[in-house]
Image 1: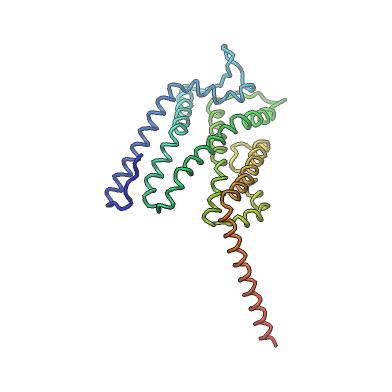
Image 2 (image 1 turned 45 degrees about the horizontal axis):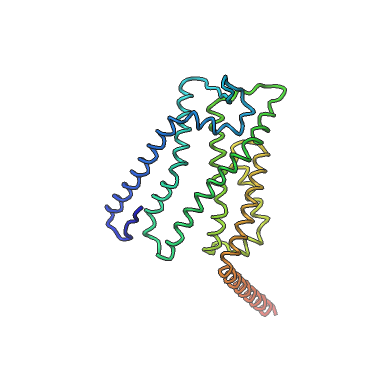
Length: 277
């Protein structure tokens, strides 16, 4: 897809923005229509990992409950919109980044395609991880809480909504390696500090896991927490291998800064002692 020139009149910039928004809306609208017609199949696919906890229909497939016809329509539209958004997310991300790309320096533009590919791959990996690993134990724990005193009626709107939130939450959480990598690249937080502050990072990841998971299940939170720790450590390892020369320079600059601060502190202490005497 073409990228516009960096210097353009204001109205040309607005025209390019409108053009890219039209492309996004058009792609999303087509995808929503297609997935709405296939929403039954998509719904069965979404609930497949937790089908053991549902009553079965005459065809043996897991069966959800809809309270009224409007709920059926709203659930199908939500499935279609979510599926269309995920399917067209590469186009949406590309159009948004391509609008801002002319403002970047040529040396910065070379990171565009690898970053784009890594972001899409990590999101897909997080969604697949959630689908294959997380959904079944999470819903097993949740449904077990009703044992002995209640019967769960799997309402379509509630179940589809929480599944979508799970998928989005894990997909976004798995962007962590990209964030860590660019923190090191742009020296926002040097590698040495990220490595030394692992206790603080782990606590932050635990809080993030508790906030991001859409249920109150400790099982889900701990599974996400374990996955994020693995991703964090892997991202540090990759950064250390790929950015070894940059990290050495960062460490040297950090040591020089610490030495300068120590010298200033020592000079300040000597000045105070001289004034006292």
